Image (cartoon, rainbow, N blue to C red; front, side, top):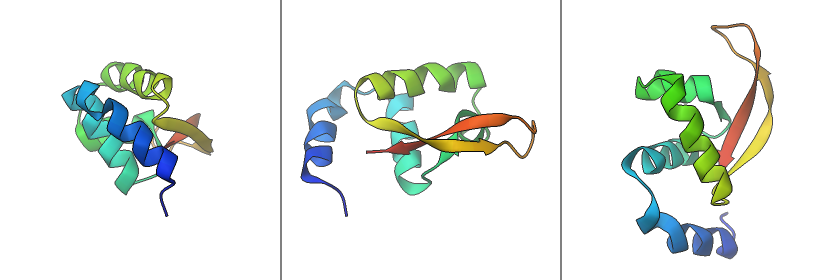
Length: 84
């Protein structure tokens, strides 16, 4: 169940989101706990395009750190994100 405050937060900034920000936010709603690398592979965009969008969404309070995992491709520890 989504908290009322989460819906209010999204509603207050959804018109301010760019196309890629909105795409990443919506992906995290459908596929929670994705890393930047996961999002890069799903969207077929460069990691250098994804990372700043995650930061922007975090600054807006729409995306939060979930946990660490080992990336299946790079075999490195990465941060995972969830959308509000």
